[in-house]
Length: 137
Image (cartoon, rainbow, N blue to C red; front, top):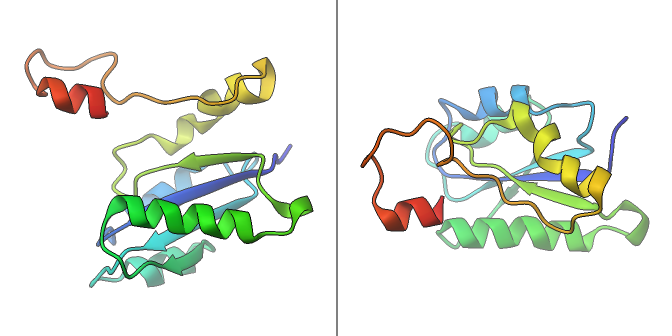
């Protein structure tokens, strides 16, 4: 059953991966996918549109500005169409969109307010990331 989930994907020059990210998002639970194009000079925008994503443009460079543009879009929706859950995914496939159901389950089933996924738990080669990178990821 589709839930009122909005996926926001900040993207800068992700033409090689954005299609794969979009295909692997579980369509059965997501209401809308928004790709925020952050001054890409490649075909990221056209590819995202061809996969049916809503594409927004953010002229201010930076991941944070692209995320804020997506939130602004979500807030602009009428109250009955505002998402109940917002998921942020990277456009380079460093996240695993096919695992989104597991990510949102604590919110939908256990009444959590927020969930943060981690790319650093599990199988990671010792010393492969600096401590600040571990905290940031």
